[in-house]
Image (cartoon, rainbow, N blue to C red; front, side, top):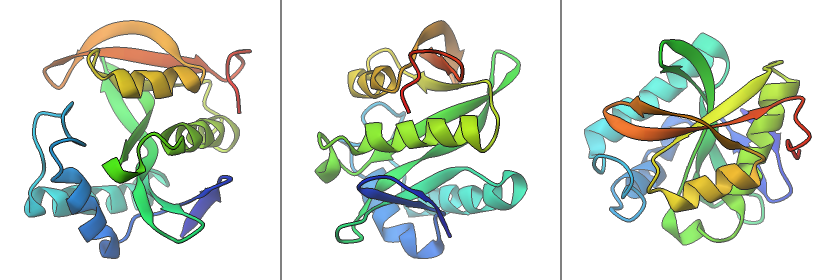
Length: 173
C-alpha cells in the first residue's frame, strides 16, 4: 500500500518481496558501518516481519522507498516508536542502499515523514536518534530542521537525540 509520494519517491509499506533489496542493504558493511553489525538473512527476515507487524499494530513503521522514475528500491524511511530515557518518542529513521547516496533521497523522504507525523498523526514533535560519528545522518537531520535536543545512551551506544517541533519556524515541509 502506498503511504505517500514525494517529488521523486514512492513511499509504501514493505512487503515480503522486498527481502532481497533489504538483505543487500543490511548485508553491506558500508551501509551498516554505524550499526553494531550487518544483518544475515534470518535477521533481515525477522526485521521485515517486525515492520509488517507494526503496520497492523500502529499504522506506521519504516516504509520502502521506491524511485518513481524506474521503481528501483532505494531503501527505507519511516516512523518508529522508541523508548528514550523512559519516554515514548516517535523517531524518523532512514537507511538507503549505498548506490542511492548523495542524491538527496534521504532528506526528501525524512522531510515527508516529518510532515506525515505532524499533519496525519498530530504529533507535536519528532526525533531522530543518531550516533555522534554518523555525520551523514546528522546532516540529513539538520536539513530536516532538526537540532540536537539531548544526549543519551540508546541500545548501548552514545546517541544524539535530534528534535524538531511541529510549530517550529525551522520545520521546513
